[in-house]
Length: 127
Image (cartoon, rainbow, N blue to C red; front, side):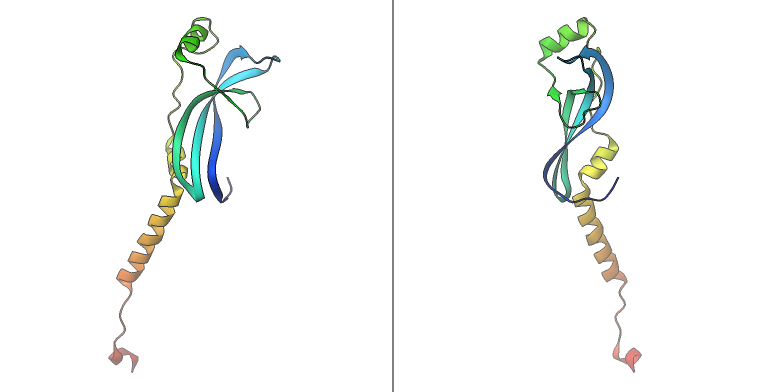
């Protein structure tokens, strides 16, 4: 991972599980987690975008899962797992997703500690 600065909304896809369904041109499909980050230099908010369907090997597009009745039909036919895996945010998602606030807290804490331990120099010590 490398350091970068972002502005606006960023969506990331993370592989969860292969599924038996195929795309319209025979592509292998998989379930992925959608993680959405909003950033101003660093991410300040992260949210769970839920499970989505992606083409294996393609990292920049996805199809939202259909409504519950179609999901249930696909689970009965074996195309989707039953139950669906969790799409909850991981600890790392949360750590990196709120890094702007963490950086601001670290700067304020460092400034406060520096000020607390700064020793005042008296006139007697100067002479």
